[in-house]
Length: 428
Image 1: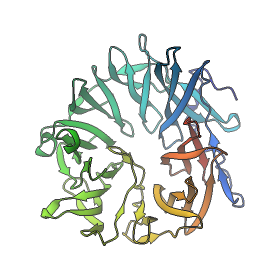
Image 2: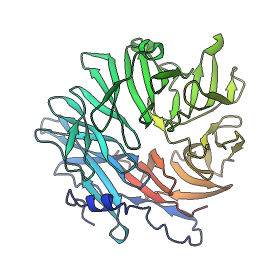
Image 3: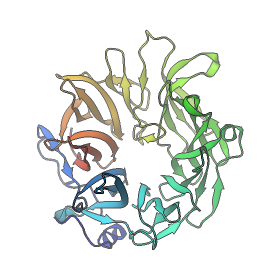
Image 4: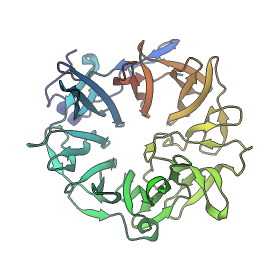
């Protein structure tokens, strides 16, 4: 199909609520592998390279991402232009792509997240970076904050987590929640939030619930700690990210304030590696899934990018991660805390659970002896291989929806990135 469609082409689909996962009819006999479908992307101009990366998926199967076009001048210098995109599956027509409109005067923009209906939000370059949200049809924007700012998290129906920063003092910044009617709630005013020099929103579970990352210190001594904010009350999770010890991971927060986190902790005066499921908001209750205090003990954790949330905590309480008791293997904890470790298959050096959906479904990312990364779906003890097109390797996982749509980013040998999707409905 053509790489470009009219900007309004997705609006009727979105408004009608007709989006779905491709091929969600009656399940057929399980195939040896489920093949990825590459999402359509813009065509790069002459002497330019286009990389496109997906960043979020809505429960209805709308995908958001960004197209980065790199051009090289005769003198060898390079320049970049980024433009926000959105995709939806339209049955026989396949995947449709929509370039989200930029406001007049904006030279580029990027999307960071979606509401449950597929409304996009992010930032545009308009006298500096400015946080915006797009209309449902993707043809207009609403500015949420003055420059410099950007949207870093989106709630199911809002609010939008807006983070501001100072280009001259990058260790400083603030955060707020902005509702659809423009009401602003600054995310500060408690000891947990005010001890740092910067705040940014990691995820939004609803009108009164968010994860805020609080940064303090400078240089290699800088740390970042996750804080649960719920209706003005806060709770600092006892893990931290640092240059020397690596990143702490926190799942996307649920509407009731539940989340899962892993990382190094110094609570109680003792350094430990912990994996904890927190339930019930503030103060809530903690269930420790694993705690290690010595180098000879196995550790369990979550897989995520630094400072970001992760799709590793299902709506039914299931948790996807890894355990290092005999090499690194994918691990799944159910709502009762029962652990299942998935054995490595032939040729695998290590594996992690990188996405999860309700019903005990987990996506496993395995590193192979030949250096490649491969995906599989684990469901009820069985693994189904998820293949990528020849020459493409998995670089990051975006999300596995409860409806069975998996979206990830893949990369070829030239470093070009593309979004890919797998229909896993009915697969086991």
